[in-house]
Image (cartoon, rainbow, N blue to C red; front, top):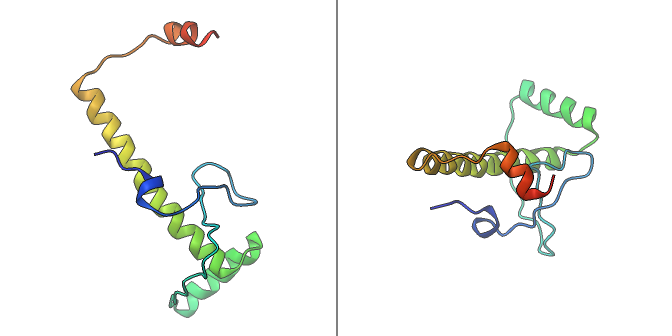
Length: 105
């Protein structure tokens, strides 16, 4: 079964400001955000705070982005693995010249 991030997660997929538009998402729902607690040791906290300061974002935004990007990466990997399985089952290719011709390039 092909994973589908749009149906698996109730998120609106949009680029984050200042971050590459590829593979980045966040939620703009009108609901109250769910509070989550993350514990860091002193060294991890220092690293995360430095990262946030360097990028001009809050710890909350950094953690949210990291989690959502990880989830999206896993969906992308699952889709790629499925595409590989389909190709291996029926390894038909289309020559590049034919693709360009079909696209009018």
